[in-house]
Length: 176
Image (cartoon, rainbow, N blue to C red; front, side, top):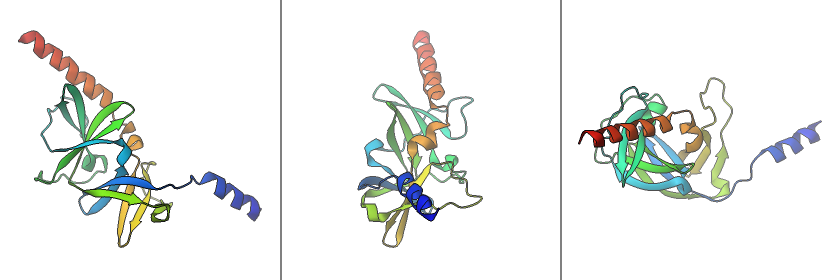
């Protein structure tokens, strides 16, 4: 039986590979997202608010002709709002061929995590993870919470936010 359990554990764990992540802060916590999904990092620009949008969706921006939904990650994690400073940025990520802006307190650096620096997320009772925290990056005394940004933003109606803004833009064009 213990041999069977050992084999199950070995096959269910995904192989860890060297991974580049962009590290950023929300409050005192440091997070990381796969660099491969980062399109660009922009200074914070206040988005146009959409009536009826959920609290996480701050609104939309015009990014070179594309309507870009902007999400506040602090709201996604039920954190208190923070003052917008010169360090506040919007990270533009590509999710399934659609760009989305995520607002964070500040960006640190690109970190190259070796397989030895990647830890699995421990199972903990009462912890609301919903699968968006993939693991932990251990960098000496620092720990990065590694996010699956696709899974984190999957439940938010970002397509509706983009469509709402496009309809508003069309109406505005008609009025001019």
